[in-house]
Image 1 (cartoon, rainbow, N blue to C red):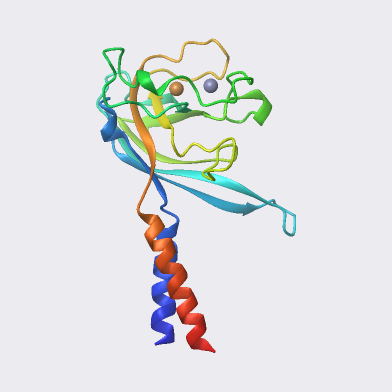
Image 2 (cartoon, helix red, strand yellow; image 1 turned 45 degrees about the vertical axis):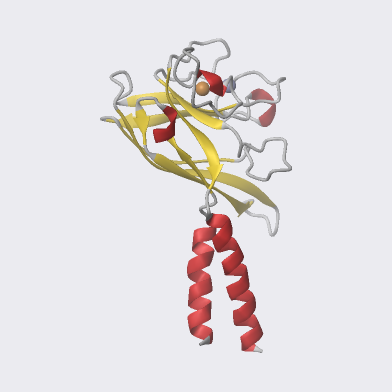
Length: 203
Ligand SMILES: [Cu+2]
Ligand SMILES: [Zn+2]
């Protein structure tokens, strides 16, 4: 019985990672597919207990845009969730500008916090219209009390490479998705209950 409960708890705990998602199919653009987003604590190499959080973005996207087939294209977190009705201003226009503190300039992903927007995730690489996404970032956060929380914002893909140089043309917006919390919260709760149950039975 105990083993059964622990196995169950383990299965539920794996699901806990899938707390957020972003579905490009909601964005009316030329990019379709859904990505999973989760935050994970990492330990600084060669340290005993110095930790930092890293946000992971994973999934597979497909582009039907003729300009976005093979190559690198700008990928950013933008400041607002886009509206279903863009009001004729163009695909993903209501997503606003890049998510930032309003002070720092635009920059490449590998820059430090003071030299790029929170949302500057650089570029992603499509091959024949397919993006196998697997990136991580340590500036953004999924903790609601943090200044760099992006759980209520959007992700936008552009039809040009992002050089990281402020003022350079980022190209048109070809797809976007709104970051949303998945039902993973339920499994977090059930995992907690199962773990508690398993432990109480083991004593
Ligand atoms: Cu952008
Ligand atoms: Zn930017």
